[in-house]
Image 1 (cartoon, rainbow, N blue to C red):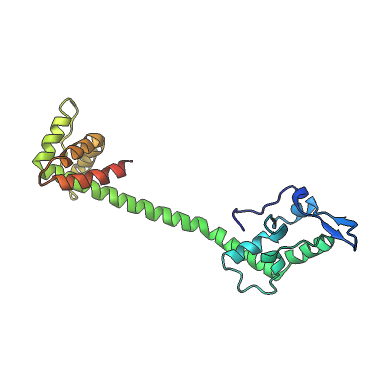
Image 2 (cartoon, rainbow, N blue to C red):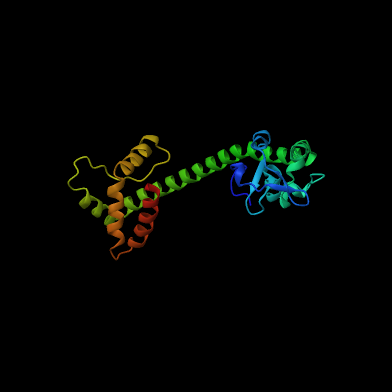
Length: 220
């Protein structure tokens, strides 16, 4: 019913007219100015009537329970009484129910950026921890495995600017920085080494396979 974030206000000629009188000789049309005056008017093609987008959205989000004097015509049923439309629209606009729903939606809109910022910070922190953990494991496996070091030396044999992969030392800052720099600048070669070792049948192949998968995802 409410698939967008704003009211649907189409060309008024698609909104059904209202016929009055016994022989329906008097025809009333929806006025374009009503859309301009009441931005919350929302045309719902399935009902061929208008609703209050603000109240209908609050209803959808289960935020309208505490509102008083709810008007179903503007929330769920639909409204199409063009004869008294302007008067009724103005009455609904000033109603306690409409103002309550408006304030509830405003609270959500104001709190959403803060929530998004918090979630983004948490995600970045988690990604940072995951990256550091991978770096530690990569340095550890290259330092402890002769198979990895041999494969890495073979893959980088033609690279004159090769840097040895060393274990991280959390108490020595310069050593820590050098170890991370060596790993990052040769990340492609490290991935190739892990892929090669993962394909071999030895004690480190399983660990190399897991590290290759995680490191490759982190790199992407």
